[in-house]
Image 1 (cartoon, one colour):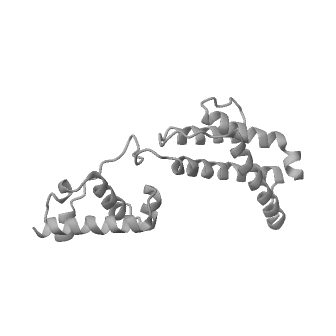
Image 2 (image 1 turned 180 degrees about the vertical axis):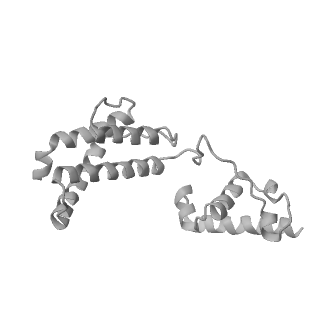
Image 3 (image 1 turned 45 degrees about the vertical axis):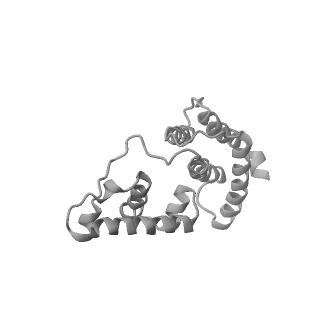
Length: 188
């Protein structure tokens, strides 16, 4: 690919910025795009999902595939900027999204809870009947989390299943059982 050969220095810089920053050795640069990428990776590395082993070859392979698509898109769209600028800008956003995705997918530990999590207290009895009850105290932490995702975050079963890395049917059954349990508690 001609663009990869032409802009190999930019390609290698983007790859090394993501890899080195993930390893805890962010490069010092005055380039705005490098600073932006370092900031993104550092912020998302601190989320403490589960530190995964990022391979430099993996970053290179993804970026190489994206660059082929960028060149084709540039030829189709003919934007008013130089192809180098176009490729670098698109690379920044795709690298950011890919890195976030990898951080979440490779998490094998407990469910992610941010360090500065806002605590929500949901009184389901009040929501269902208008009366205050302590229905949540009878639920397990997992059941409360399911309720939180469903009603507070507005997630559907498929999104909850992806987040929890479980099958959709399993989550649907667990959600149904949890809601039935809440109904039994409220009904007395």
